[in-house]
Amino acid sequence: MSEIRAVLFDYGMVLSAPPLPSAWARMLAITGLDEARFQPSYWAPRHDYDRGTYTGQEYWLAVGEAAGLSLDPTQIAGLIAADNDLWTDLNRPMLAWAQQLQRAGVRTGILSNLGDEMAAGLLERFDWIEGFYHCTWSHALKLAKPEAAIYQHAAVGLETPLEHILFIDDREDNIAGAAQTGMQTIRYTTHAAFEQEMTARGLQALLHPHEGSDAPPEGSGAALP
Image 1 (cartoon, rainbow, N blue to C red):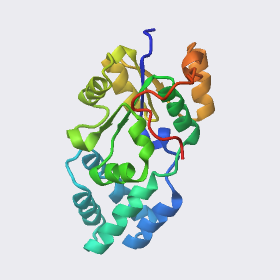
Image 2: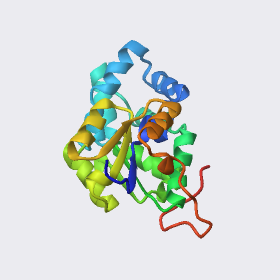
Image 3: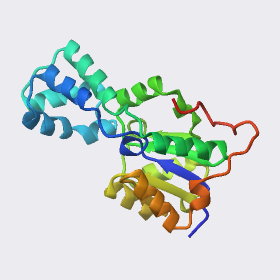
Image 4: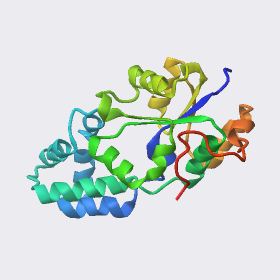
């Protein structure tokens, strides 16, 4: 196993907790749809939104069309706001570990499939994102996991060879895509299972990095809120 010099995090379900039910309920209320009609309409154009084929506005027009709705600008604005709120409950143990790594001088990055409005919403809300050495947002590249080129772009941004990067994601297809490029990978399910996997691989030193008493390294960013 190659030495790990950088850790690359997915955002949704890794740095974030599961979706907020209250935000999902707001989207149902705005559209007037029940769960059975809203779910397929929401997900069908999602990859195109994440990949930058659709802007946020275009995505919600596509959702409305799939559901047989004509959404007005006020509804679309409300849906964008609720959708942005959906993934804003943080996975605090994972974020705390990322910030430990940063204080210890380990490079960290984010690689996430996110549409333009969602990425802008996260950057506006969370100043701790500035603590990551490099962030790769899929919409900006017109690429998305599990395409090989997006992992390669993230490695260039981290200035770290692929084989020296540990990538953590909750989806098996994204993990498989990263592994095919040469990255080391762990699929995230629960934090307890993640820590057990790190220990089983002999990565206790990375799991509990030494935090120096000097000033944080460049790019260490704000503390966990």
